[in-house]
Amino acid sequence: MSTTKTEAIDPICGMTVDTATALHAERDGETFYFCSEHCREKFLSAPEDKSDDKPEDKSGGCCCG
Image (cartoon, rainbow, N blue to C red; front, side):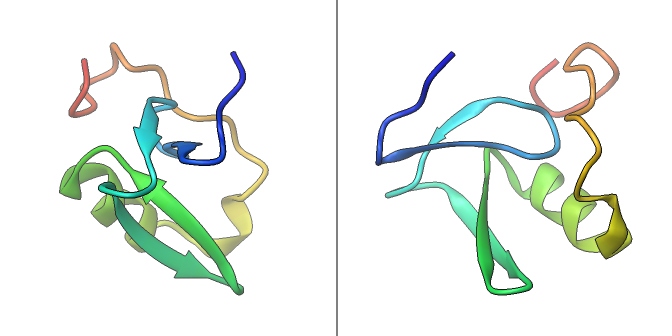
């Protein structure tokens, strides 16, 4: 799946979000966008060295499942 300039992938659940309206957070100078406060908080509480991890399975209890 490809995204447009105004879309991003939530790094926690993998959901496509609109960057104009999505919640966001910065880490190491990069902006990350989220579908919900739940995913944003999970990202902020995770160790920074997990950036190579794949998004979690949406059926595993995430806000989107």
